[in-house]
Image 1 (tube, rainbow, N blue to C red):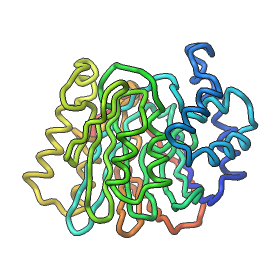
Image 2 (image 1 turned 60 degrees about the vertical axis):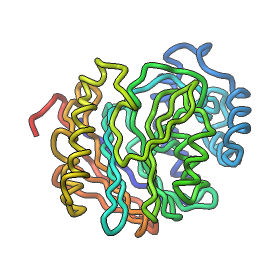
Image 3 (image 1 turned 90 degrees about the vertical axis):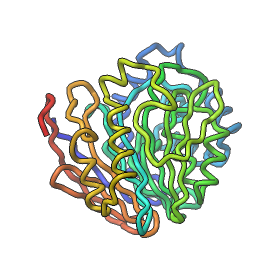
Length: 328
């Protein structure tokens, strides 16, 4: 399977964002309505939830809804309020060294990825991020020197709250530091169990365990895979090797003093790098964020696609993934 990744630099969402949304909307609409329209929240419910928890995002939300055509279903979808459940794999870690660095593997179904890196300036911050739902964020960084990424938390519960990619967008649009991000992670409800790791340019970091109906748990750890304090969903843990990946990362960070390039390279090999593309848990890319310099890179085995917050170019990169598991 081939995937075309696209890097878009568009300070204010306009024709580029609109084109991408129009291309993806038929697929997102099918997913969004997969449980029937009655299972989804109304436009007004989503608007009110945004106003209650992330009011600063409302002007951006309204602008994007207009670009998306102003339709009811698209506007509900863009609110990210109580969307259908979704699962991913993923591993992430903070490397401190001379300058902090956030490294993460995004393990997901290759047919469901946006494959868009968006460099934008929608509010007070310049933000570069890989998107989900065309404005949500699975990993990214802002010009204040704050980087953030997510992993699935390995719990079956689904409840009231927002899809976590929009919470990450909110953090990058309006937070300067890890301490600022913590306040958001404690106050904005997430509709599923997710782990969010942040690091700022001073090296201050946190991993937050989010789960609907419970208080956010803050763990002073630099790593996260696909469980929280304990493994609850044992079958998922077995399939994704979440415990094995966590132990491997702990060993790398505590027993080894790897230089940055070597640390990044460990994400491109087992046990962190997954080839389970046919099961929806293949590693689609390794992202590296450097908050001090504003540099970020998307890595694949033998290939690096480099970007920076200051970049104004638009570019594309085609990547081929196997249709079945391979030995790496």
